[in-house]
Length: 391
Image (cartoon, helix red, strand yellow):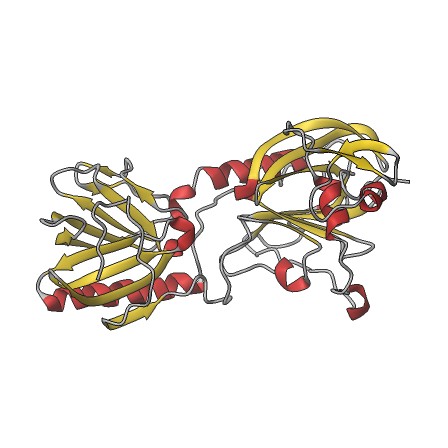
């Protein structure tokens, strides 16, 4: 068994572990059976399944008259704002859709654009980066005299950015003060375990476990800044197995969080197994209903002018009892609309590529144009580039 030489610097070794005596393999969000991608990716023309809310994802606002001015100018659609991403789909052709994860967003601002449906107007401009490629999106609210598009999207994005402790592994952070954990708004402490040895060095470091409903925290008794905050969202496995220090609790983080292997010793062994059982139980509960930590309330929804805005555009119906959750009516797609054999990804991607600064590519001669041009990126042709220009 390999224990990191120093907490927060080493990664887990390759190869399968065969010495486990007790093992719980924690599958990411196994309530849905897939890895969390919604807030970490930008996807185009998503399937109805990908459009559905995953476990823990909630609809915060919904605007039924929004134009995707950048890629589908002149097409009226719906913008769905969740706690993890933005979803837009066309009303006339639901297959035409977008999913923009908040973790991919670089900047959000407003921009004056020329909309086919509203003319010269103020729109929401979003710059993103996914897989080393920058995309920009422009959304225009087709309902005049309302700033709801800006306030909802920008507000939820700020709430997402301020709640990263719920979702990201943190090493040596300012999370402990006077031996007490700084509690997150939706966090609840379940147990505190003293006498936990961190096996990150030959002599070990004595510290304390704090187990909550959203994460596992350990800190050294002699130095509070020597700590780790590991959300259940980033746990890959929890095991009890033999080590050179005796039986140890081994927690592995996901590859996305760095693939750390953390070893802890707790005496006596009976107490070690109790902690392992408690972690397993809490993770099972978390995996069924993850807590992502994004809190946002539409403070102005009650002050919206009901006479000037159609009822279909309101998040909550005026006659709907307070506290009743919004239901998401997903567009129905006929099988004829979903043709996976059509590969037009190059057209879609090109329509949203950002025109930011970039290094000049190799100059080549184009026989088709009879001119010297920059070498096209892989997957692009002159024909596909011409097709993204509105006719």
